[in-house]
Length: 310
Image 1 (cartoon, rainbow, N blue to C red):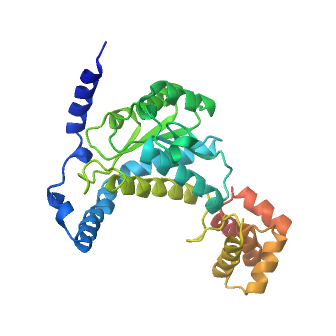
Image 2: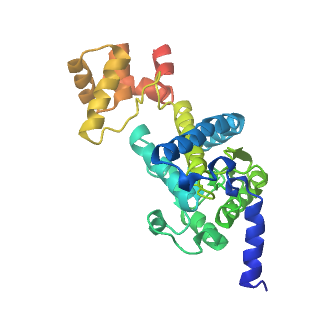
Image 3: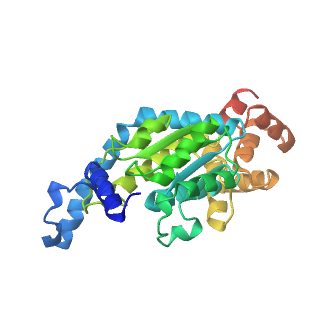
């Protein structure tokens, strides 16, 4: 049985090998800089993030294809992580609901330690492999689903156990990491690595690594929703108008897509049950709400296809 000291030694050895845990030679004097110089230094490091993400485009595309395939066959996109990574997954998942009017269970975020871990550190949660299996069985993960494991280090036991379990079920699996030699890259079917290098503040992976992860998750969910017909041109035509701002946005979207007046947009939205996509189709095609709904359904919710096939 390993002692606590042995476990610590093993973990230290693992951390020594992680790029994201290294000391950044450009920020060794960080504590002696002025406020402006600290901010400039952080900003210069952040500029490297988008370039690192661009190097992973092909792998991100594979994850998108998995997500689209899963959702088309009635499955889900599931994000899973611990700490910052888990919080980013939940953030992306919950924002899909108002943006694309998807059901609450189509894009799911799970974090080690549950809801409490969103605002509190939950001791030992990220190392709990059994908890990962428990969390996935609680949502009844099936082979139809796509699981995306998120871990800057690529070595988080909670996430590794989740990917292993999902692979055994036959799920599509992907991971988002920031270390090229990570275990997760070898286990996930689509391994995404945004190698952003050592952080400004050593080991604080909420910074460049977290920014890279957020960019990747935004790309996965947004591109998947575009391919599922949730976007027309560059407009969020499936936006869920749940408040005054989003209601005004829906009116504006209809006006932008059709060049109609505000009154025409509001009337079409009223007739369509506040569904911007349907309102746009009604205005551009001249069809009534029943015929437009039927045409949209025939084209699996893709507005551009519906307009081409009317």
